Amino acid sequence: MTEQVTEPRLIDRVPPTSFFLVSAVFHYLGPSFAVLLFAHVDVLGVAWLRIASAAVVFGVWRRPWRVLRRAEHRNVLIALGVVLAAMNSLFYLAIDRLPLSTCGAVEFLGVVVLAAAGTRTRRNLVALALAIAGMFVLTDVRLRGEPLGFAFAFANCAGFMLYVILGHRIANDEDKLDRLGASMLIAAFAATPFALQSAAPAFTHPVWLLWGIGVGLCSSVIPYVTDQLAMARLPRATFALMLALLPATAAVIGLIVLSQVPTARDLGGIALVVLGVAVHRA
Image (tube, rainbow, N blue to C red; front, side, top):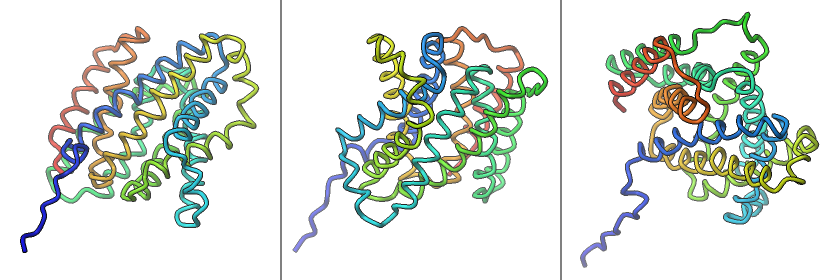
């Protein structure tokens, strides 16, 4: 009797790096739209609109509350939800004070540690060194200029590390998107007491409300779903090092959407980061 060969699903035929590239674009496209909305709605209010709208989308799409009824991974989902709420709020507080490319570079700092922990080959050490050099060139930290902004940026950096670690804990589960949706529901509950009042003005302006929902789709639905699809097929160290692209993505989107023109130093940093990713081998 011949064995039946199972045809791979379309989603399995797509290279995992493609999912990451989609995530890299939307990771900062949504926040750039959020920066424009800050002129009308308080920063924490925009963060709440992002989290809450994503929670509604996941609720309708995945009905993730069914996952929360099971004890398995419940603590991980709760932790991830709290991290998402804190990370998103801190990032928005940072980009309200600093250029998007600077926040993207600081966000990458903690991820370097994760990449270094999994690096095994000389080639990957070279790639990591290039990416670190590019990150430092891009950051060009001047703490005296905006100390509070950098405090928020570094706190978000710590949250982003936890997001990568916890995200990999659920990325290989068959119901990973349900688990992600459950974490987003928890994030909405965690953020509501602190930020709902700040979001109140949007409920009387339909355009602002739709704008906030669009921020949620671009920031917390598309990138997080594609992150999970990439994490499921990439080792943590590989995924972490590929995140070196994010400062470059932030600089490009900051230029296009927010007219934040990068300097020659910024362009040099971007080149080093991209070169590091090109040299890297899983």
